[in-house]
Image (cartoon, rainbow, N blue to C red):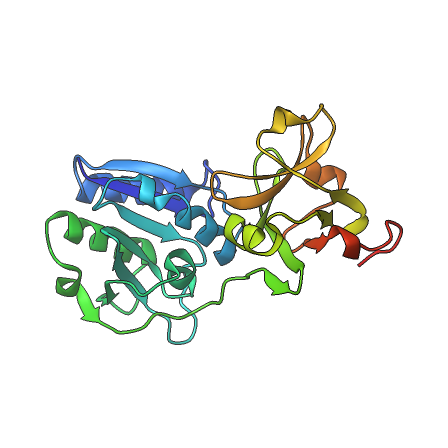
Length: 264
């Protein structure tokens, strides 16, 4: 059974959600429509890319992923079909495809449409075309490149990793851009301190589960995405420490850790 996912910046009761689902049901009878994620912060391409990048591969090959986040084209941006890793992505060429894939796609097509055509109609018609077995190139003009946005990566210096919070989940856990691979490369078999926002908030070991520490204790763990996550067992660390997207996470060798009273 064909699957179409929707990742949108709309609230569940927003009119746009009903419009696109109604159009899909009319033009793609029998298709399974799944809300991959809704209520993405408005116009937040990085947030949407993080969600899609870490979810799309769980769907069957051939799934069509429609992205309705910051869809209005700016300057020379186009509506695209992007094929990669046996999945199809439909959305606006605003830099999100590069953030999702972090690699060259297999095929990129600029979708043919009328000058005043609404983007929801463009996306639905493209999805319907793919579901009838048409190739992306049958639905538009092949192009070579997509607009690029550079992902925010952790930086590495001698015995120091400086990263930042890139996502806060429903429980208030703060997910950083520090990968297990980078952490192991720098700090394997070394003592370290993980400093969050300031040197007053630090952790000196990696936990496997939230329950490894008593309720109310702050901890660091590598989550299912292999990213360093800062949490408090039984509480919302983002609220308690006023963490937000962009908050600093720094890992130093223990001997280099600064005075606990000095901010970064």
